[in-house]
Amino acid sequence: MSQTRAIAVTGIGLVTPLGFGVVDSWAALLAGTSGVRPITRFATDNLKTRFAASVMLPEESGGRFVSAADRLHAYAGSAAEEALAMAGLGGRAGFPGPLVLGMPPIEVELPDRLALLARANSADYAALTTAAAAEPALAQRTLMMAAPSRLAARFGTRGAPISLTTACATGVTAIQVAMEAIRFGEADCVLCISGEASIQTEALIRFSLLQALSTRNDSPETASRPFDATRDGFVMAEGAACLVLESAAHAKARGARPLGWVLGGGEFADGFHRTRANPDGSTIVTAMQRALDDAGIGPQQVDYINAHGTSTPENDKMESAGIHTVFGATPPPLSSNKSSIGHSISASGAIEAVFSLLTIRDGMLPPTINYTTPDPAITLDVVPNVARAARVQRVLSNSFGFGGQNSCLVLGAEP
Image (cartoon, rainbow, N blue to C red; front, side, top):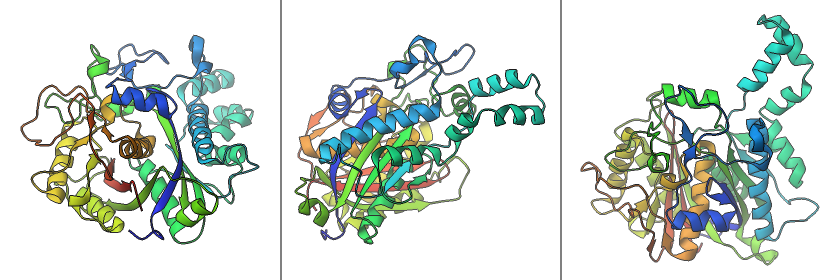
C-alpha cells in the first residue's frame, strides 16, 4: 500500500451503550458485556419490542425529554472531544481541516408535535404552521444541516461541513468521503464523526412494522445474537464514533503517532428493494472485493473480519455466503460487535472501525456473544462468546445498509 493512499488515524473517540469513551467501551466489549436493556426513555406499553441499546444522558434523568437532535450533538461532541485529545489537537483555536458527519435523518418527534398540537388547539395544518412559526428553536434543531453546523462551530473546523446518510452504511461512507478528500489533496486532515440517536417511539414502531426487530422482551441482553440459528431480528442502538484522519505527511510533520491506518474502501449499491439487499450476496461481494483492491491486498492477507452481523435471519445468511465467495471455504475469524452493542445504524460503521483499530492494536478479537445454537447454513468462525488473542495486521470491516447501500473498509497496523 502506497503511503500516499493510506490514511493515518491519529485519534479515536467513542460513545456506546457500553460506556462513554474508548477505554470503557472496549473493555466491556472484550468482556462480553451486553449493552441492551429495557427502554425507560418512553412508554413501551403494547409495543412488540420494548428494549434497545440506549445511551442515556444525565439530562434525561427524571424522565425529562431530550430531543434526538440534542442527543446526537451530545454523543458526537463527546466522541470528538476524546478523539481530538488523543490526536493532540484538543484545546486548539480550531481544527485544521473540514468536518464530515454521518447522521440519521432528523425529524420533529412525537412530544414536540403533541406540544404544537396543544399550542395550536387544532389539528388544522394552517393552525399547526402558525404555532410552529412561534418556535424557531424547533425549526433550527431539526434542519438537516443544524447538526454539522453546530459541531463545526464547536470544534472550529474549516470550510463547509458535510453531512450524509446512507442508512446502515453511513459510518463507513463518512470515512470514505474523508479518505478521498485527503487522497485528492483537498484536505490534510478531516474530523470524521458519525452518530445515531433514533431510539424514539416512532422509529421503534417503524422498524417493528418492517418485522426487523427482535422481540425477545423476556431476555433483552441476549436478544442480539448474530449468526445464531435462533436469531430473530436486530436490536436498535445509539452512540457515536469519531476518527481524526490525516495524510501520512501531515501526521509526520506535526509529530503525531498513528494509531492505525485506513488502507482502502469499497462501495457498491443495488436497486433490489427499498429496504432489502439482494439476497444472493452479489453486491456485498463486490463491495468487499473493491475494498481489498483499493487497499492493494488479497483475501489471504486479511486476519479478521468485523462483520456487519445484524442478527436478522436474512442478513446474516447473506453475509456468510458473500464472505465465503470472497474468502473461500475457510475465511478468517470474524465477529459482530452488534451482539454486545446492538445496531447503531448511522453510527455503526464508524464505531466498528474504531473497534477494528483496537483489535489490531491489542491483538484481541472481540466475541460474538449470545451464540448458543450454530446455524448449519453458516459455517464461520464467529469467535463465540469469549474474546480471543490473535495477531492482527489487517481487518476488513463490513457495513451493509437498508436498500442495498454497501460499504467496506480495510484497516491496518501499517501503511
